[in-house]
Image (cartoon, rainbow, N blue to C red; front, side, top):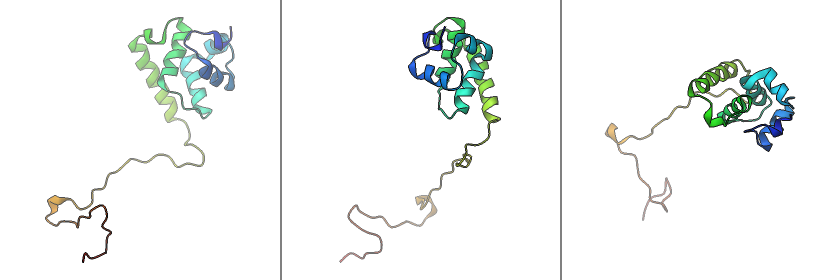
Length: 126
């Protein structure tokens, strides 16, 4: 049976699976849901966790929402561990922590000049 005929697997997911070499139910069973998900991710696609749950549901023969929460958590942990082992994407630096800088806080005692919509900085009013 091809992956296009599996429960929970839509055309886009089936195309992703074909592109990573998983064309049949037997191929999917041989690697498992987490490895299949990671293959799709390594290929450069951006699957959501719904694909992971859908793959597990397809292997169990149930709707993806019927996959037990404990199994979902277990699969997410496995996928996160496998993702951490992936090298950073080529051509792009690894993501750094996001920082926020606040300029001109009113709590500091000094007040920053305010501008109206039509004012421009550095221009004196007449």
